[in-house]
Image (cartoon, rainbow, N blue to C red):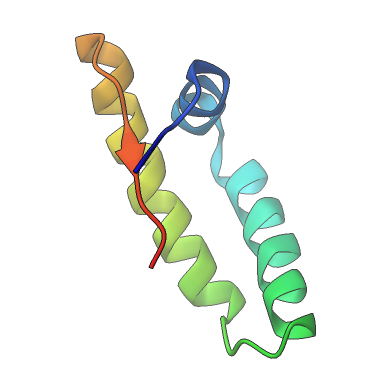
Length: 69
């Protein structure tokens, strides 16, 4: 379990659609280079959901945690 930094939460909650799409493209390319089948569309959907969660988290003054599987 890791805590997501305030900097990441703030960026995600403030990022516009173009910034999220750019990050999704870069993320998908990196994962594909490692042999993963992550598509840009899936990466963007994930980041959009994560951005909404980050915005709710920031608005409430809560922390965001994640884990790696």
